Image 1: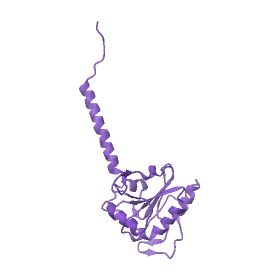
Image 2 (image 1 turned 90 degrees about the vertical axis):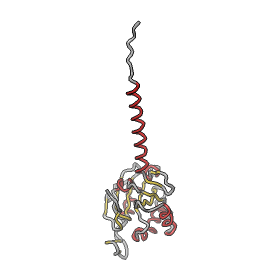
Image 3 (image 1 turned 60 degrees about the horizontal axis):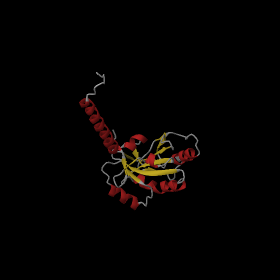
Image 4 (image 1 turned 30 degrees about the vertical axis):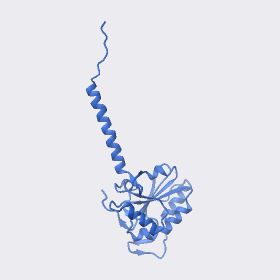
Length: 197
């Protein structure tokens, strides 16, 4: 008795499975190559790791004096808002090593977790161009604000005696209260992030 069963060309099917497997492996490698890294080289997404809290990314350089001057204020803000926010220092310079970052954290007593962003994946998500510059994301990982911390610096090398606007604090107050943030961006003053595409 003749049965009409469709024939499967296994060689075509096998090639398709193989190509699909290569594509998945390639995407996985690309994702890890583009991910931010902790100081041990492990891929990490700080927005996911913040577990539903507001996320504050602080783009920093070890050799930027303006970044270093802001450390006490950033630590104060981190401690004040610890229940509702997660702060991360992000080092986007491709040539800065984990050892150099570790030394920077020790030298300035920075108790905020640090990440390397050599592929600029976080830089792109935050639209950052300067260090120091901050980016604030809500609990759903939507960018609320990016820009300066406050207006202490008019231009690089010239600071006011005290800041007269406090953008990061104002954005955090609004975000924590689930209110619209007062502004989406403000120009930062500092050191340019190199190798931006």
